[in-house]
Length: 114
Length: 255
Ligand code: HEM
Ligand code: SF4
Ligand code: FES
Image 1 (cartoon, rainbow over the protein chains, first blue to last red):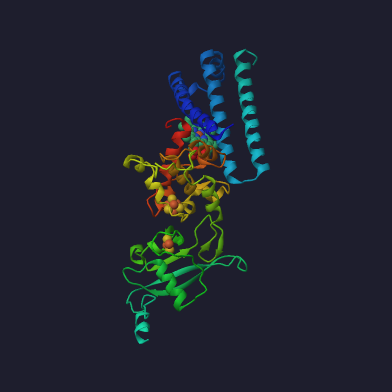
Image 2: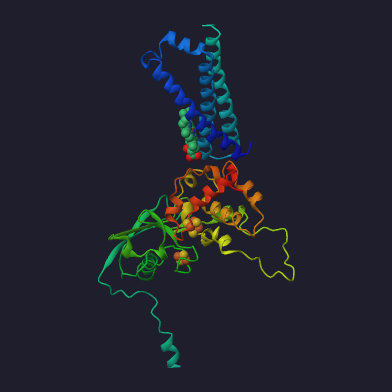
């Protein structure tokens, strides 16, 4: 992929995350902040589909943004053909793994499997 | 021939008669047999107009001729004499001792350049990256037809790039750039500013090929807006602005 395409995604995910994280914080503030992380309320949140979709989107946006950022940092830290290949594919794999694990939690809870 | 010898009787250095003097600390390092650099100190007289380069040449003339320094024009035009003066990348010929407001003047070789010896550094990387962005007008019609003698530009078209055409390839911007310090493949602010200089030139048709060259994993996107390049440029080039304007093309804000 072209670097400019990657960076458009990087800036785009950052902007979208600002919007969605703002909604996320507003939800928490209006739905009783202190109880946010209580077991029942976490389960309820994941079962409320529109909110679960938004959490999933934040997970994807920030995983893409964060691991691409990590890739950038590592590319600037050290250079070399093999190293750079490992960094690029490693970050992509880690990104997919994190999204998969997070999605698994959201989907399983949503479907009442826990 | 007494007349001729009279004419040739030229004053070749500042006289050692000034009442004011500073301590000039020169970083000495020969990679062939030194493990690390060390400073040598010299007391050098100066006048209000004495430049750091003149002070270094004074040391070479009177105290230690082995100090390695690169210079040529002595008038901020050739781009040879860049060095770190009291911690900041500057041209030695364009920096007066009196403007530094310090009794101690420390000179070191530029950062992010391999040292040849003392204050002289290797310019290969700068020349390579400069060449890489195709620093010349690219056109299909390489030959001028007989009734066309020149490519006319309006003053507004010249305004688009003229500031960036002032670059003297001194490398001070690359020396100040934090990305240059860690990314050995980074194209650097000097070359990026020159990429903009040609892309913004109405006579040039090489925009697409240049944008492709800088749109690389060690290209323009590795600039993180530190802006130190523009702070140190002695010619007012403002590479950081050139980089942001170039980004405009790549992000679709300009065409
Ligand atoms: C939602 C708010 C956020 C915004 C607006 C934002 C914006 C940005 C921007 C514009 C850059 C590019 C900087 C540059 O090229 O110099 C960047 C880089 C980066 N971001 Fe974010 N970001 C946000 C959240 C995050 C989060 C939550 C993470 C961690 C998961 C993260 C990780 C990174 C990393 C590792 C870099 C690379 C470092 C760098 O390039 O300087 N960001 N971010
Ligand atoms: S942009 Fe300025 S600092 Fe950089 S090489 Fe050109 S003249 Fe020197
Ligand atoms: S000697 Fe030419 S720029 Fe300083």
